[in-house]
Length: 519
Image 1 (cartoon, rainbow, N blue to C red):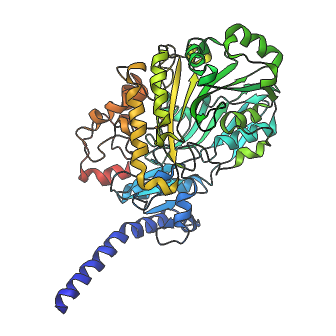
Image 2 (cartoon, rainbow, N blue to C red; image 1 turned 60 degrees about the vertical axis):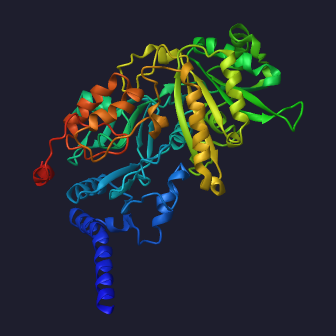
Image 3 (cartoon, rainbow, N blue to C red; image 1 turned 90 degrees about the vertical axis):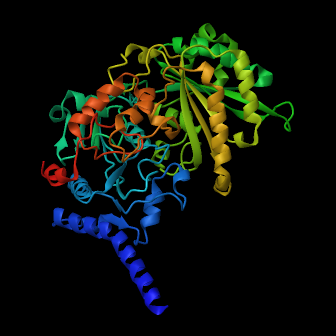
């Protein structure tokens, strides 16, 4: 019995040492690649007491912070580009995958978790978050670890008449698979095109973006008008579909739909539609415009507020009034899509949805799982219609009336039954099938949804075929150009995850590993 027990314990000890080996090799490699830096202090392994808090610090979807979620072997929090270069090299050398976490939202946890049982390292850019605004040139260099709130706050500090529409990139600094730092000129036209909307974690690690800022008035106008079913909400939503995309480009319109208590009977549930807008102009300019375009809403001056552009972002996203711009710096602000357990999906609408379809949809919001569910309609038109589908990887332009974001969230104590909330979301998504885009049913890359397809991460032969299932939904015909760029810049598919762009072919052999590292 004792010899057998000794063999079992010896075997267990070997396995533990074997599982720890990749981490030790990785750390040793980092020390060799950065001999004159304190990079060891910037790395958190699973044995480190701060590991868990660092891992969860920037997690937006708590669905991927449970004990069953695969976790990284190590988290690297670089202070310099050289630290990232070292981490990329050492991950390549020791066969570890990389997940890069920047300052943005991440609906499916792809920047800090993995659905695959593979060893990986998180490169967390939280320390690389500087924002430098040049008012005279109306530009800003923003490191990738910054949040959009930090960007908005810094713009507001420097100028009251500059803003950023969140998609106006004119240069970038990227670390590629070979560890080179490339800018717009050195990376070339195709790669620069691909990183501006082609999805993160595919082509390299972006260190910083150079943005072109735009002129905005010192004060803009916002409003929210809430209508329930008893106040004709269904007809107003139906009407909004046909006119919202026709407003001037100075106006951003949306509707948030959720269940609420009836104003007539608080014990009765109803549906409430919140019509919200930001207008780059004054109240006096907005009211006649609304009376002309959408008189049915009944907007009056008392519904409107004038505020700075920075304040309008707090109002639009968090419904915070007269809050200081510093509120934008709060990285722990909870919403339906941040710092909670949630599932989200997206759609694009090209024809008005019939009233009868909305009436059938409302009943689903009365189900138990929908207590925190929200649908957000965001109008298109304006500048979106002027940009060609091929100008950027994001192809959803003219021809769309609006996009839909579906979200449902739940509390930690309910997460044991998370599948019932996920199931509700999928039922709603299936119900909407006849009324949204088709062939393909389009989706928005920034609202990642693994339900629409994932890569087989170790299936080299069918990587393109599997990726195309979800790729055309996000990128339409631009998917093939993205694949071509990937094939050129990262043919061995080092930067990869469940929904990364694959190279067109993978003919790599293990014997090529050393050659690849030296290239």
